Length: 83
Image (spheres, rainbow, N blue to C red):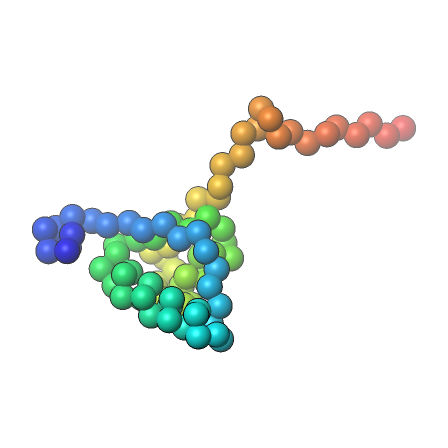
């Protein structure tokens, strides 16, 4: 509907669906229908990007990866000093 009004649309993808079971097959059909007019997509990982591209037959250059955020104030690597 947005394309009808000239509005660009972007969708996000967070899941990895399978290809070989009935639930995955049906979900892929629904997603393929929903993504048919999307101008670009955002995936949360490289694996998710590849999965979306394969499942929905979307050009991978129109899928961008933005990883989940990490608060670096709370999560920092431990420094190990060895002698």
